[in-house]
Length: 305
Ligand code: BDR
Ligand code: CA
Image (cartoon, rainbow, N blue to C red; front, side, top):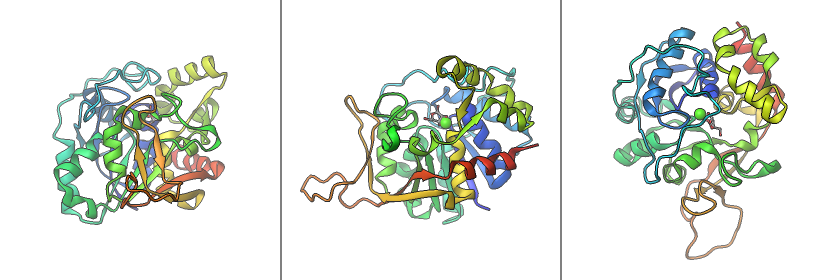
């Protein structure tokens, strides 16, 4: 069992991932970030969801905007509050600093903490910029984000970019180009692991059923499919059953400007040039293939009440 800091812009699939994390790993704390919702709403959502699901973990407040880009509107797919507008939320949005919590925790438990990041990477970038000494002390950083275009999955916000990376492309570039040991779960695999509305109901988890109702209704209306991709939960699938993934290693950079902003690029060329943007970078692990049925069945068995 790993000790996790769970970094989230908590929307619907983040909440599924949090329920999965609480059942499979040791949760040290939940750090929130803007993305699917504003950061204050993310703090409130994390507290509400933990209370409803009997999850015990402190919640911290992280970055409210990207490092350099202008802030963009929250996602709409997850409902106005990010959790399907299913419940009143009486919780406070005041909390201690997420970035400081990450720094202090990694220093206090060197080589023991796994960071799971399922929103924009702004908190992680701020933590390593403020305290570069933590970089070699992180056990692993597991990210849901990016898209490499295998099987046509190249983006979900633009034809080139995945939401979490696109939201703060500079933060993503800094984190992926750092010496942190990263594992990426990009759209290439997350789009292959789907859950139907009926399968959600069979989990017998009323809170999960309630929060994903508008998401499923939208998907049915727009795509004719009563179901959704389990995106963020795949970070926990990686920790629980890494053998279900096929992994490529390559250095990765992120396009920060222009029409392909947010595009994740892995080194495929063997060309050596003086202007090589990958020169000297750590090869990160990219999950590009998945045994979707193994991942789905493990998730169902773990979450079924
Ligand atoms: C990512 O975007 C968000 O809306 C989801 O929570 C997930 O983290 C998928 O691109
Ligand atoms: Ca997310």
